[in-house]
Amino acid sequence: MDWKKIYEEKRCTAKEAVQSIKSNDRVVFAHAVAEPTSLVDAMVENKEAYENVTISHMFSFGKGEYSLPENSKHFRYEGWFNSPNTRKSTELGHGDYVPAFFHQVPSLIRRGVLPVDVVMVSLSKPDAHGYCSTGVSSDYTMQAIKSAKVVLAEINDQVPKTFGESFVHISEIDKLVEHSHPLFELGLPKIGEVEEAIGKHCASLIEDGATLQLGIGAIPDAVLAQLKHKKDLGIHSEMISDGAVELFEAGVINNSKKSIDKGKMVVTFLMGTKRLYDFVNENPAVELRPVDYVNHPEVIAKSSNLVCINACLQVDFMGQVVSDTIGTRQFSGVGGQVDFVRGAAMAHDEKAKAIIAMPSVAVKKDGTKISKIVPFIDHGAAVTTSRHDTDYIVTEYGIAEMVGKTMKDRARSLINIAHPDFRDELKAEFEKRFNVKF
Ligand code: COA
Image 1 (cartoon, helix red, strand yellow):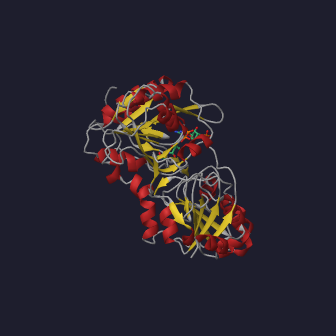
Image 2 (spheres, rainbow, N blue to C red):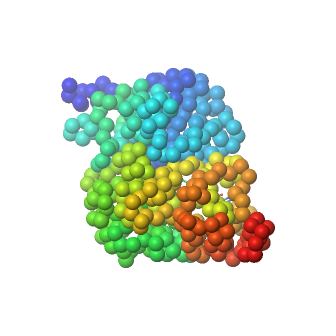
Image 3 (cartoon, protein in one colour):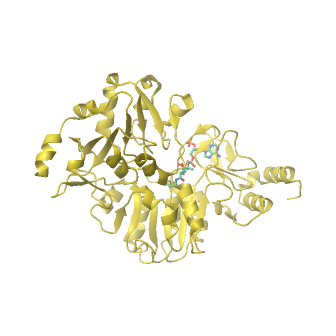
């Protein structure tokens, strides 16, 4: 059958599309920049028709209204990564969080551990053959489309067409809604003196020909800013943002020395500005692949000269890294941090490095500074990267190596890269904790 006919048969309004959602269903939607906003808004508007609909997704830039307390009779938020809009619901108690490594999410969907009744996705316009692109996210979206009982799609002509495993045929969609709107844009991070110093320390650990994984936030971009004089870098990363475009255009990233997917920048989702979305559009140098490929530690381990750079919230004397909780608050999620740390540790190539980078202090709303290097993690906090997995910790004051080091050696090197205002206090804690002189 002519795909254009199928397209017309499936085309409807967002209000009509969300009639497919039933009480007690689990609705999964594409995350971050790929959130299908017209469908999410229509679902919330239609809330009186539902009871106990579970909503699951990773990061969200959207309004997150389904997670508000007043909507808890209709929706139950069960997130896979908390964002500013959904965080409160897990604190108040009516929302919840599923701890799971990002690379596992497609398999949990496939095995029915996280069943999907309805998936809502955002797609590019179809090509001449009736294929749309998931554009900025392949991650769990591709598996959710395969496993869902009902597939609802927002067709947005501003979604870029990307290559890799990101194509969905019109025949795989149950209902589609046309809605043209600009994609969410991540503001460019502010790179101050602290981030610049962290970037320089990280750059000192990156050799020409390295393959990079970069996490989210100002630090990855600060690292990229220090790599302008390197050669033949490659990307195998959960995500990239605008910093990678700049280095690609400058010829620094060319993916020529990669041991897997040579010549391609491989990512599972994208988050940046329009510059990034324009860059990836119909660009054969970039491939979006599902997260059970990109983030699988066994795949990551095949990369040569791999350097992973991720951020965290707190590190204790033993090198336990807290990245997704602040005390009992579920702040974000594990995402791909441990996938990459473990992949680097499993790499046959002894050059692989996993860096956790952070400013030495956090500044509270009232201006008080707190050390991110602490004797003990906060009460109720969860360890994201265990002390057995931690490799390098970097602050603006230097680099602390963890692998093969004793607990006391780890603590000493961490205190040496703590903020100077806290070092005396930390040294006194060291002496109490370990019963020896610093
Ligand atoms: N104690 C209390 N509060 C702290 C803190 C600490 N030790 N460290 C940071 N904070 C506060 C900050 O002050 C800030 O507060 P604000 O929102 O009121 O400004 C907030 O926590 C976030 O800190 P910030 O350093 O700005 O975070 P970020 O946006 O750079 O993100 C992570 C850092 C760790 C939260 C983020 O990288 C993450 O979720 N990582 C886990 C997943 C991951 O690494 N994935 C990898 C691939 S994408």
